[in-house]
Image 1 (cartoon, rainbow, N blue to C red):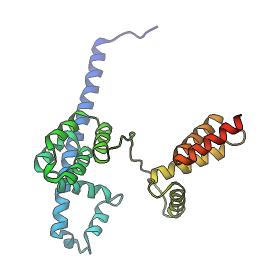
Image 2: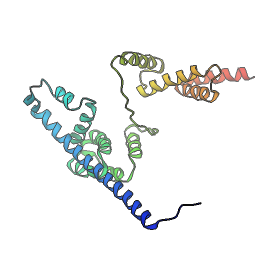
Image 3: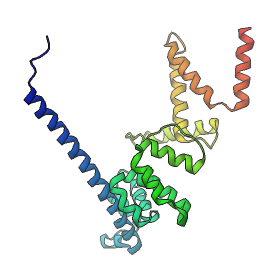
Image 4: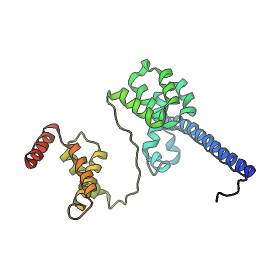
Length: 232
């Protein structure tokens, strides 16, 4: 039996959900605005060497203290301030700092020829993932699949082993491959090995398919020819 419908309670709860979502959106916009402001201040700290007030030796030491998890984000925010024209920086509160970083890539390339109005319009209309793809297409001429940055914690004792594995994978795949591709190959190799004997054939097929994608054109043809010979 369906529950007894309480219309007044339903309206109250739905309004509360809308209020919370609206509050979350406002907080997100406020955070993006503060991040843009933060980038401006960081550039000023570097230019004026304000880090000397804290008896630090360099700007990198200052960032290490303020951004112990990752200094990369600080440099991202500074790049937005340094490369985007003022009219674009004013609009970042509407599009967010992540899209601002993509805009900064275009502005850095195009300099005075940067089509600010057109790209700001795209930034407002497109989702973050779609906008990243549009910028990637513009910069490289290639259509890329959606991507995201994944963070996870590593102990310092684990890093040498992981770096060695990624370097070995890079030697096998080619130095032009990203660390993400290298990590995927390592994981695919693990899955294939784990499912060779009495394992999941679907997982094995999935892993072998990913391996095949990494092969250069000539090796792909040789692999397919070998399969055809065995089939016949």
